[in-house]
Length: 631
Image (cartoon, rainbow, N blue to C red; front, top):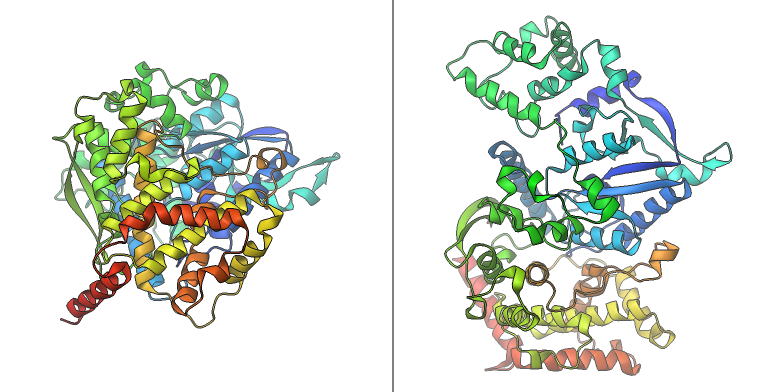
């Protein structure tokens, strides 16, 4: 992330970081870095579609520590405004790495590094439940974060080395040195504080003896997410920087020493050809790339302050030229996080990269199952003649394909900003192949998950068997029991929790089950996105317990995935059901849990009626797949 190798260089030179007792201040938080770090620091399962319980505990504990130290957090989450060719290469590499990680996990091996596809959604919703101020960026997030921090004169918390380059007066607090778990035991002047390390560009530039204006030039030459001179065919003549040793520390020291005599950015850029040496390639291309890399550290006109202070969207007149394609009504929902940020890529006709999950790599990606839902979303944004380039897994490789937009008949004449409720609902239900009557009797917050499940049962290949459906519905019942936490349901809750805490030892990951549930999660993701774009014709599933807004206790909050899908529960349930365990032994006599299960089952009954039933059809489907594999 950011400037490759710079974090290690700063860490190894301890003089660049100073001890800091942080308290009683505003704090701008890089939300994307935060949820990455908190997720991988929690004890999470990554093989079964993932759980979020430990992650949600970490999030709640983190913000409680800030509150205890009188720190006022403002969380900024990445949006989707910048997808230059150079950064796309970086993203392409990262996604291919995720595919490789998913392949390792699919073989039953333990590995870290794969985020679940709902992590951003869950993170935003727990922030809402805790009443933590947050914004989803329209512009490039790092620039917006630095701009707001400079305007409010408060520090930035992140794990992105780009913040060693942004000129932020109040400094940068690297997350790796932010000892928030120790906040409750550290006291100074009778007030809690968080022990951490602080970095400022003023201190750094004084010690290395360069002008602060040259830091963006330093980052661009060293290589960041937007420019890499070596890969472009312009390798730096390192003998000019490294007369004796050749390592990362020496390279950075040599580059800083080379920059020291210059006062202005243009002076340094004019001398870059001498540093690179003349090659066969066009030198202008390298200078243009460096200019792009430098521009990424310029602070834009601030839009976040207007949003946080007044709840207003950015002034459309301040949008960068390439973002003028966004309809005005989308700006506020995008910043609130109630619209998926990748619609920006679609409207800009840029590639869309699909999420990666643990699946059977010999089968088509689970995203293929949900593609028809995305095609309608593309049609609503681009019209029926639109086309989107999608990047997705094919086998174990990331490949691209063109996906045609589809505009349903019900949506032929609609304009998104003037939709009425009935048309929005009709478009949503028609896309999923669901009628309003089939959702009768369901709690409103479960209408969308059940509609998605109907779609999944009809479109997933191989077709999910009845036991997979039963386990999934039991998981939904478990989520409802967690939400209500009524005493009469304690017996069933305890039975299901035992499965989570004590799974059968020696049971390998069943790739068929993982692949089927991966398809369901893809369908749920697309269903949630389409529902958001249509301004919520169906209620979005409630994600957090209201009590959490006051208590901020980890045990109180129950998130989207804990309620709708819990991988470490549904996978063991499938095993139990296959071994003959009956539903009656899992569903207690409590009338509400049995009633809920029956209502959902009745709403889905017609999806698995037919010749031979779903289980027989699925067994035949698997036989055909295995036969094809052997061939």
